[in-house]
Length: 450
Ligand code: PHE
Image (cartoon, rainbow, N blue to C red; front, side):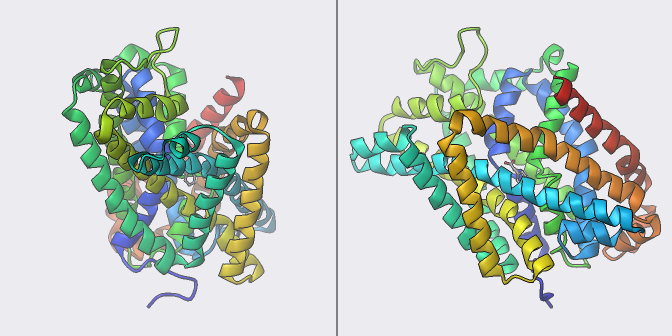
């Protein structure tokens, strides 16, 4: 029976939703380009190790606390606190988390809007509306605002339907589509000249570049952003999991899907870059570094598609469609954080909460767009580089030090009576208590100093 506050109906539904949140622009565009310029397979290896040994334990902290409380982060942290001081800090952490999630969405919606616009441009090109296609791919306030609003409207529409009818239903539809279009593109790009060179860059390890402290810190940051940690997203999704579910297993599956898609995206983006090079598109900067991130997606790849004629129009469409889906299943998980908080803490009805918060976030996006040079990079750095690790640190402290160990064990036993004898229980509690907070603090210190 579904609880009145909503619950995922099945393990598949939860995994699709949580993997949908995790798999986003971070995986499909951030990870491959970082791997490309930072030692290829060696970066991949560092990322894999960090994802399993640090991001997975931190993800588990959020899932377990969330499932125990069946509530948003603020009231969940309050619930596991033994005294009023810790309750107050817990509430504050939850509130900051929902504010940060909202700001992440405010820049994410802008980038996702560009993806939608490029998707529409491919359609316009197919029907020979060349002027329109050009307008859609060029940076302008009207286009940026319009498509940010379209994307926010989609996000608001899904979240207003609630956990099962909105989040679960759409994630279960969109994630298989994402996987299918990703595989299709990988296979297609492999058949093109130049792809093998990209494959070589991706799969040959250059340990000298990957094992620098700076890079390890970057890879860890990427792993935390990629698994949607720190802002309460995974905590709130955890709060919608049924008590019968074995949490370490489902958390592990979500981590695996997230990593698998990032690695798979590498098999698309790296070969595509070298196909572009083969077709005469410049992919190196003046200093000989690989072009990365925004320039890659919005300049190099569209130019590659242009060199491919009609096939390029179709491939371009599928590519930007894939990016739009990845962004949408992540953005709904961001919006759910402030929405769940407002519903639960202030008794507001879901539809009203979604619309009001959606409008506020769209306003924030508008302010960013009107002051793009000043605010865009600033909001990204403030939310992802500083706030996410620091909030992740707080969740680990609450799981490791504040919450009573026997209650934690009891929570895990609900889904697995034998959990006490598992490897997870032998390692995780100490890990989340000492190793995770220590490393997160290190990232934070490093990014402040760096
Ligand atoms: N994990 C998402 C991505 O890789 C980003 C995200 C961050 C989603 C925080 C939710 C919360 O793009």
